[in-house]
Image (cartoon, rainbow, N blue to C red; front, side, top):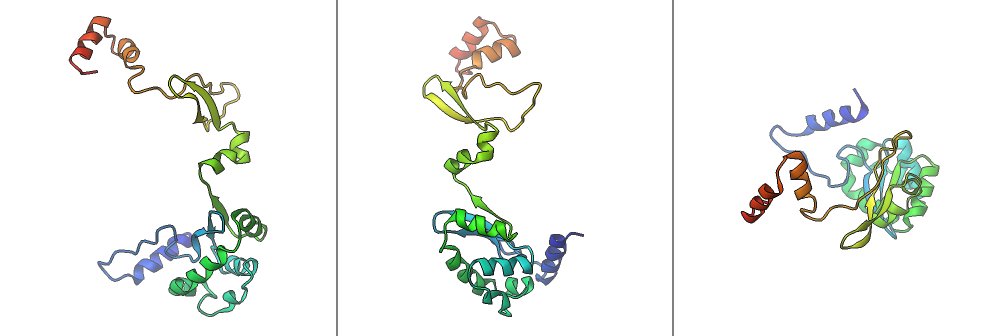
Length: 195
C-alpha cells in the first residue's frame, strides 16, 4: 500500500460514520502543505510530501523555526494545525516572484511547479521545442494560433492543413461522402432545416 493510500485510510477512519470529507479546493487533505499558493507575480503549487521537504521549504523561505514548532514539526501535526500554518506560509509565499520560488525550491528538492496562464504555456521552452503552437490561416479570423498535436511520429508526422472549421462548414461534404446523399437530398434537408 502506498503512502498516500495509507494516509487516506487513516483520515477516513477519523471521520465519523456518515460524515462527508471536507473539500480542500487546491490543497491535499492529508499532506500539508501541498497546494496552490499566490506569489508576488502569479501562482505555483508546492507539495511537501515529507517532513524533510517541509524543513527545506522553511529554510528557503527564511523561517526555519517553523519546522521546529511542535504544531508543524510533522505532517500529522501540520494537518491538525493547518489553519494556523497556512496564513503564515501564504504571507511568506507573497514575498517572492514565481520564477525565483521555483528556482529555489527545485534546487533543494521541494516539489513545485508554476501555474501557467495561456501566454506562459506558449512561451515554455518545451512547448516551443515540440512545436505545440501552430499558426494556420482561418477563413474569417485571418491567421490563428492552434495547439499542435502532442503525438510526434518520425515516419508519419502530423500535418496541419486547416484551421478549426466554421460551424457547419463541412456538413455538405461529410454527408455527401459518408451518408452518400445526393445534392438534391441535401437541398431538401436544408429546406426542411434539418441541416
